[in-house]
Length: 343
Image (cartoon, one colour):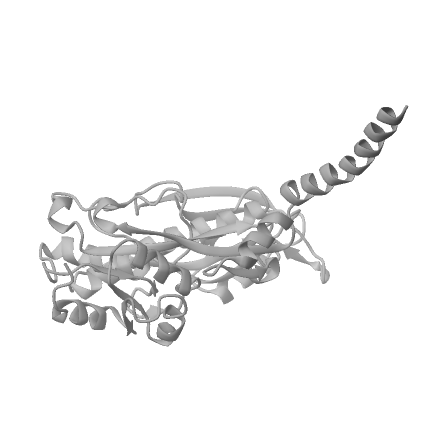
């Protein structure tokens, strides 16, 4: 009987332990961690027709971070890690669910590739045609647009109305009545493709009623002023499942080299992070402290970052890297050309 009593005591003590461990491992909590990712040679990512990529290897590196939705036990491990930052989910994904957030990140990457191409061609004084419209930022679940439109879509026409701005888009939707069927002309970039080309799509959608004013027609998208560019040639940038806009500067630097058939500086290798605008302006990005760690681990010793984020970049690496702040593409190129050997 004594043995039996001991076994039952053990069972009742072990059961809560198993439940707690299972909960800690398997259940997500509303927090994300950002940890160092990789520094990737852009020569292995970018393909420019008739340009041998090996000529530009070990020149320009992009960086990324690892984003992890936490469980209680992962929260504990990451909380103790020296180069990991934890954020509430609201600061990372906002109101989006996991699927929506992932789609938004891939859309941002697609836009960053396109902007990099435009900035590179513009820097080299090559003309790039453009089309204006209303860009979809997010699709509201349960609305007429859900399952039809995607973040990154550029709406250029609603029925017979041309869309060239946010105002013309709003007016075109509100010119219809709730329940009306409208044909939308959309430019969509394939976020799963490495190509910078886009497709023209047409959708017919039955409009709903605006929750704030049932007399007004309602589509169900968050939108902003948008523009698409038609790049010459068939440039490809293969990033797989990496999302976000922060590789824009690195892509642009590599594209300028390959399109001009001239390496900036044969004796240096440089990592870069920062968004890129079509006019070459460099913008701030997230995860800069972790990206600096990834750069250092990859053996690269020069890191270009947005001018406002130099101090952030030193958070975990101190003076182990030469960290240089830049505000524009032309400034970044001039700096790389003047750098001394880092080999």
